Image (cartoon, rainbow, N blue to C red; front, side, top):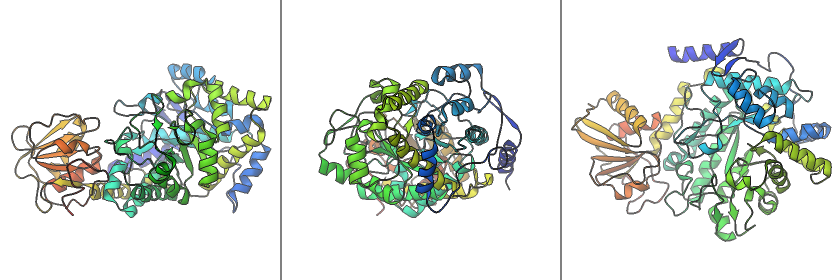
Length: 565
């Protein structure tokens, strides 16, 4: 076993037994399977029946808790910094994540992180994800807190691990290429294997929900706001990729979440800051946006996320996330979806037109089962409780959603948790590399010979980190990398659609969406991702050691889908 992997395994194993130092303090990890109270959930032949029986015994307060999935400040469950404690008290009226779980009988918690190049960073008010060891410790502590309550119901613990631009855990675990890369690879077997490897890692560190994959179909605009988070612009091909991702994740015991229903791909407006309008008619919506959600339904997806989207053809002026016409009439009745519906983050602008209590009530009445990231947990909980006492929100409605949530937990409990050795494994790296390699697309240039010869020089427009990774990969593949002269390999990263392309380079590489290549000169290549696996695969193609078999999953003006048919 390589020394790095051995060190990680020893660290993670020790976390299940002893205290571990975290940024916010020390937290003694608790393994619910080995010590303390055990779960009241016993997986059986009929999860829905058992879930209904349990939900029927819960108090109003416990039922409401099962519908809440907030974030919390602090990198450990029981001991946090003074700043995190103060933030928690302001948000939830309790000092630590564990206390918050207990106070509200929570059904779930989301782990978050924020980075400058993340298009969803605005909703993440803190960062409590650092490393696999820290996450394993935190999740164990959170589960121990939940199982110490009288109901003894385990948590759903999720995060946004889409890979690519929206990735919460970046260090110490395998990084898959972005969804658009899998769309370019076009092989569902590769996709399923990669996402199963990813799910295995997430499950090993205590996560059981991934708010991925993105099921949005890109429209005619150059990627809109979803960009490389999507598998592409062809509804049928996206559907295949979405189903494969769902099967992979859930085969590893992690519930997949497809988003953003009924489709965020045909708008250029960002729902984090304002309400996007979907102007297409019903027929166009059904043909162009809904197929991937239907494919996910058929694959048994655990959750569907409702989008903050104004669907003019169905309920004009009301966000889909607050519309019973979208979530009940369309998703439940017409499309026949019976699983869990979770809101997109309630601290996004379209949901903040109401106070946190009113938003929570409206979202449940509209048909959501889980309220994700309310702006203020105390106020959201009080709003739900007051509405229940007044009769505006019936107990039957609470039981209905709690039953779905509990049934999902029962299904997850039936899948054995992988060993901690699965983290950063050779198998996971191999699966990621297969997806990255199959995605590489040559739009212009030789498909049978090296695209660069002799010394090479790597330049970057907004991709400095990837530049160093590619340079290392090129050296390992036998190339001479120089700082001046040589054949220029120009990298264009995320958010650099207006990069200066007036000067020609030997090869221009799009590391995100490929639209920028339409105005570039010389050989043109797309990786659709800047992961380490993608840079390694790119190096092999540039040096003629591997063929590029990818095909663009989106149209690029003036260029064929591939030069290597």
